[in-house]
Length: 108
Image (cartoon, rainbow, N blue to C red):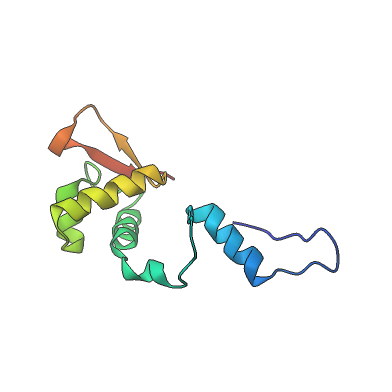
């Protein structure tokens, strides 16, 4: 949660300041296309489904096969999405296994 507290009574929250925060929070390097995040909602769908299942998410955590089952995307897209979620700090890898046995859980 971000709370905006201006330095003076005259300072207002501008569109530019709002977009600057968006760039900072979401790592956007170039111009922002408003609403572009809506194009690919699969990660949000998976996270919501895991959170609906409770604190431990799915039995055994999320993996690429389960991601494909929920979102109906290719295995390559599922793997790429999961990797992005790990890099963003949304998912964490757990367990000793690797490869097809790699499991992830939501970082709370």
